[in-house]
Image 1 (tube, helix red, strand yellow):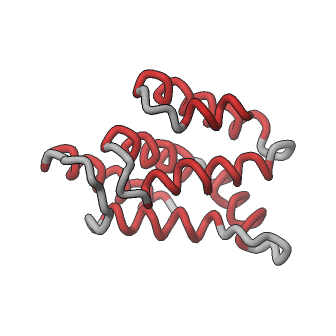
Image 2 (image 1 turned 45 degrees about the vertical axis):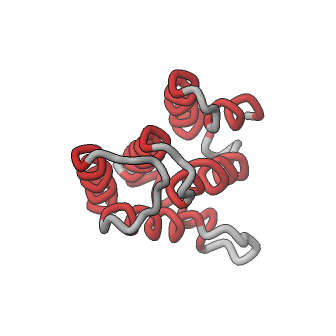
Length: 135
């Protein structure tokens, strides 16, 4: 998990592009055993990438695609809601944070220091909207 965390925030696009499918495999295969770790990665890596003005278009795009793939799996999205948002002992409201970040991206209310072409911004917004449509 440590190397996955490091690779997901690598400044080298080729590395973080390889880390994303590993995260999705982790979610698919080890959800019950790695509940806490999945929450940490989602909250501290992918949701932070969307919220940070310092994230590149590629990082934001990867984060949105990861969230889109998670949202396409109804079982996963329900488990995120039940395991984090409904757990009174959990301070992390992962499902709520996912919805908030996707809404900001879909509406174009995300900040980015990186210059983004209109086509890239449109693709990012459409992917976020598609993810919201699956929830």
